[in-house]
Every structure is written in structure tokens, then in C-alpha cells.
Length: 202
Ligand SMILES: [Cu+2]
Image (tube, rainbow, N blue to C red; front, side, top):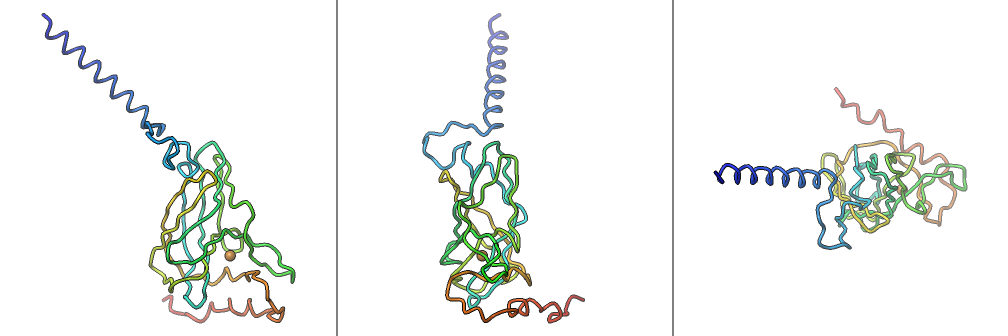
């Protein structure tokens, strides 16, 4: 009676194969033919998720705006964002922090070392704090559209996400580009007093 026995063996082997591939998929360790690939399971980008991303609406004339959201590192190792790119939306993209400027007012500047996100930790990008700065805008960014942003990590891996454009009356920190004449005291705040200018919320 060899036939039932053979069938049993085949069934057992099939079950073993399914179990094995199930394990492989669970920890994301599918064999990678190219060791230097940016898609390996241990990439910093693979352990980071971007939540609640958004971009402050701005015009080409404004020239710059910020991208905000939360960087969640679900891995065990630290992941550090070292650069970002937004295609032809922005000619220049920098990682910024907000610090107290020489005149005592909040001012943003490039953040040395980028955005480190500890294993199992989160790093928040928000108005008045760290943010991704889009500069040299190539066009108006209007509420409702989605902007594709790519993050580059310290190990060379990359992560792309999309962020909707929203109206926001803040994040007006001055940018320390040099050449400031110091004569704008208070004017930056005046620019934010638009809360009553659009009473159309009913
Ligand atoms: Cu900035």
C-alpha cells in the first residue's frame, strides 16, 4: 500500500514549506540577492513609519514652507533622517530646528546631525519645532493636494511618504539666511493675525 504513505509524506512536506515561508515573511527576512540593496530588512527606512504628515500651504512667492508629522521607529535600532527631497516641488530641502535667534525671537536653522529617532521611539515634526523645510518652491502648494516627500537615512536607505497640504496660520519663524536688517521687530507676529480674516467656517 505505497500510495497513502506517499500522499502523507507530500502533505507533511507541504506543511513544512508553508511554515518556513511564513516565518520568513513574518520578520521580513526574505532572501535579498543584493547585499548592498537599500531594501534589506535591516534598513533604517524599513523600521520607520510617518504618521499624520501634512504640509503648510504656501505660494511660490512665499518661497518656502514646512512639512510636519510624526516619525515612528518600530525597530530596535536608532534611525536617523539625514536628508529629504520633494522632487520638483522644492529646489532645496533642509532639515530644520527652531532655536532662539540672536534677537531673542524664534528662528529656524538647519539641524546638525538630522533627526535621530531612537529604537521604539518617535520624533515629532511640528510648527515651532523640528520640521522638513521646503525651499525654492517651484509652484503654489494648495490645500487638498498631496505632496510626495522622500526621507533619506544615515545608512543610505530611503522612505517615501505623501503629505496633504493644509492651511495653517503659524510656523512663521524667520529663517536665518543672513542679511537681516533687524528692523522687523513685531512684524512677523502681525502676519499671523489672520484668524478673523476668513470667517467662512459656517
Ligand atoms: Cu524651516
